[in-house]
Length: 141
Image 1: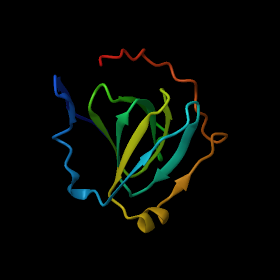
Image 2: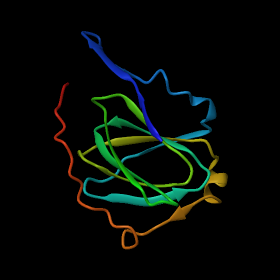
Image 3: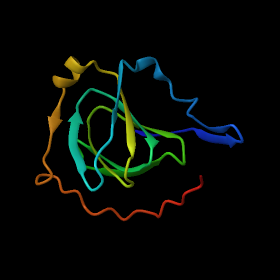
Image 4: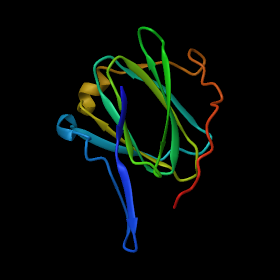
């Protein structure tokens, strides 16, 4: 698990966001999620499936919990920093948009049918989503 660093370049023509080190050869599907502000989407887990998250617009707090150890990692993804978060199999994940209109791109190495067979969920009553202590996001646009 970890962040794959990218970059953002802007000039008078506009802005380009890229993550050139993101090897997409394992990706078999992609989808976008536009959650309502204040809604926590947690905890979906996969024992085998690997996913990658990218903040296409806005910003998110993403939490990842190891299914075996229950070790928690927290990440901030924002369109101001071009980064892809890789979430390995054996993890639960959850996220919350930090800005209205945020869009999260999700890439997966499983087909939808394969994913359905590897889907494990916990409710928020089973695994609490604490109010995150987050750094302020400074708009660099």
